[in-house]
Amino acid sequence: MNKITKALLIRLQDNGKQTIGELRVYNQHELVFSCFTLELPYRDNKRRVSCIPKGTYLVKKRRDRRSRFKYDHLHVQNVPGRSWILFHRGNYHHQIEGCVLVGKGLVDINRDGQLDVTSSKVTFVKLMKVLPEEFILEIV
Image (tube, rainbow, N blue to C red; front, side, top):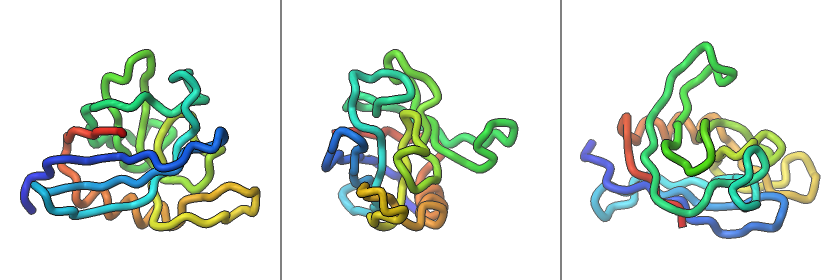
């Protein structure tokens, strides 16, 4: 596979309870992967209750079996005033403390009136296969 040149997270809707977005991964100008994302709403970048600010970040793959996440995840680096911002598996906004969940689709799985991401585990595995060990993420 050729070098990934860009990962772009486009935030589509913030309803005050959660933020829905789309993650696109590009090789040069070719879209090689896309999925939906779920984050917390933006609340002044406060820890555990807010998504991170729009901007450009270095992201590294991380494998630490000692952490509470016993599977691979993506670690967003150098977020001002924040640490341990991860992309990880999950379906619901209440599973997020400032991180990003990925999924194939959007459905209100638990019937709480909020859209949830579907097929998160499978989507995350596919995402990890297309990404290099480090890459640049732009959030808009």
